[in-house]
Length: 252
Image (cartoon, rainbow, N blue to C red; front, side):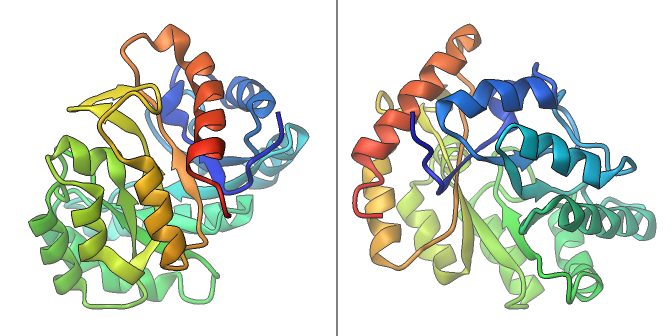
């Protein structure tokens, strides 16, 4: 199967796999880009380890790291902000271009964003805000409040299609709010809040790709999948690559 270079794969698909296992499993499906976690999944990167070793491991499997989840800023602001900045530097060292900035409350998102943006100035990284159902940025109103509070064009956004759908928000409504600030897109197909194989759910993914293509979006789409029958995930991912190539990537 040929690679589709605009697609990246998320560790959420198979959180039980180590990094090397995940890279070995996803390479035959055509993926060459990997979004890195720092917690939860067994493939999470340790930001105190050697970044060059991670980059070499990825390269051996034909991968590069493209986006990177940072640890959140919490009520211990100084320490957690320093940790997020160090993680961003680590992300740069492993080759990532985009970092997902996180905080445990909207107040902290707003208060910590400026110092974080100043600290990573010059690293060549694009920081983005992510909506995620059940977190401080779940709804359109949450996102609107945080964006207005930060008020800094250096902070970009992630259009999180599945998490908007879980919150009862269409990707079109999310995109209408975020517009040209979108620097990364996470995709998933779902029925309600349940992830399902691509093309079997309620999310209009062909429409999403067509709209973003028409508007000149040239960034990555991170493929996510958290189906109920997790034992079939790799087969569904192989089918997803075919579906996305045939139904969504025409004209790219």
